[in-house]
Length: 183
Image 1 (tube, helix red, strand yellow):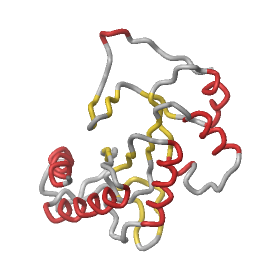
Image 2 (cartoon, helix red, strand yellow):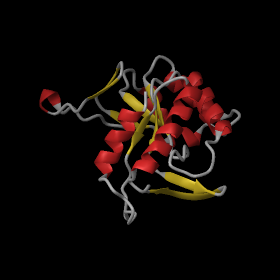
Image 3 (cartoon, one colour):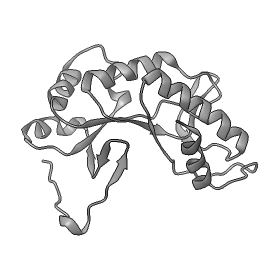
């Protein structure tokens, strides 16, 4: 059973991202499919991109179609590898764009990190060195992704357990600068 907490007007976190006002949301999990369908009014909710972009059909996609009809989903992924050294995976982006169109997601987000190198998937969100050179490289990759998708993306920071010795700025400086350098 899914329960929604009403925090009243005293606690209402919100963020304006372009034309989208994000107030609060819930992550969509498969074990709650039936409960989600029973709820008439649903909040903004997160759909994990990688759970659906490689599927060619089946019950999970059928459910997703039902659930997102007339609702406000957004896509959140872990596979963009925006900080990776490998070329941007345009095949992945094509699948992501197809899913975005299919469910009419207003927002696509991922992590500002690297997760793959030399074609090897780490299955982890790894930090970047916070340098001007890295910032320039990442900004170019963000532009490439946004141009391919035809829309702005949202990137969130990661819980970094280590920091590169060559980092010359803080994480927040790096994040803010990557925003400033992207259209």
